[in-house]
Length: 124
Image (cartoon, rainbow, N blue to C red; front, side):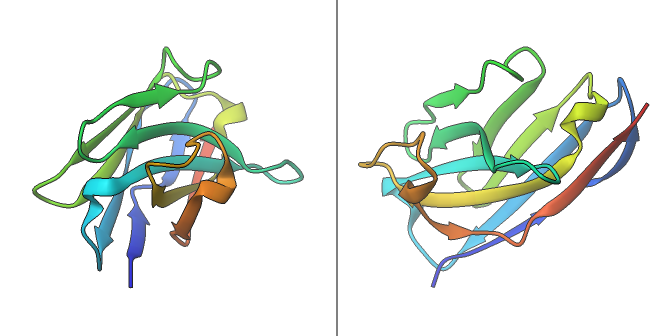
């Protein structure tokens, strides 16, 4: 059973940086796409970035492209989201997700496995 455990969230001032981690276990991820989503209070879950585990092909939402970077360490089975120049509107629960790379990585339905989420709060 695939398990995803996020860490690294917290409270940061506007303009600051955070790096989120997602430890993945319970599977061979070579055929997976991994992603970060976020959900702010009262808003729909939003795809932030995705990466194919084997080839490392990334896609990042236009809204955060200049500030967020997705990466993975295959040896550690860990997914990362580096966030810089954080804004109050980045405040949300951030989720790590995993799914088949053969499906559309832009769709939440692609992702069969989800972490529990980690809170990121950016103060102004």
